Length: 266
Image 1: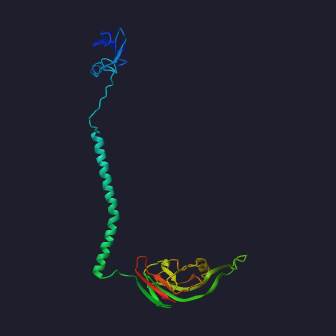
Image 2: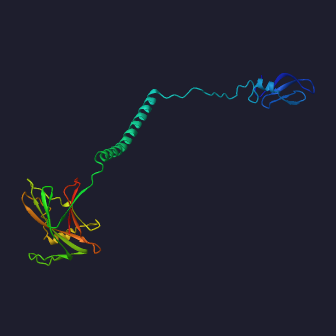
Image 3: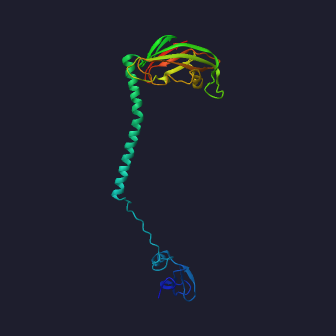
């Protein structure tokens, strides 16, 4: 019986005594059974016996390399194609949403410049105090301006049992503008008070002090209430003007989208 643990006799002869040599598969040598002389196994015999894995090479590891290409199921490939197409379309739509307004704006501006020669600018009309101007369905008039007040006081109400006098002081000086409007339209409407803007000679915006305005108007807000057709209401506007500047204009806009402005010069 022969195997990886048992020597096997082969035709090679011992160089010392001439006896047949035995093969030791585990040691990879040929050994004389009489004088115990050992020599390395020839390469040709080692290949035939499967050394060093043993005869007949049954324990040699078998390594298999697959050359078969990896493929995905058709459903997966189809879903990937659809997702890629949706992503591409979404990117195109997003790019269009950004570029179209820009290109349209440039094209419109170019066409307008070509046809008219220049882009229309804001139309500004300057008038003096006391002049009446048309603002939507109203006639507006600035009657006077007083910039001498440093503070505005609310007088004590005699109907109360305590002194409720209140005073609002200006950071610079108060400019009180006497303003009146008449509804010349056919329906009751409110005057667009957001279209009143006071400025300095350098177009610096001067802000209204609504608390001082409430005191000087005895807590009434005629301009903010609906005005019937044919009715005229008066209101005093109070602007806090810094000490380093002066009230030069009251700008009156006749609409949020309008490109015309009326400047009342003080």
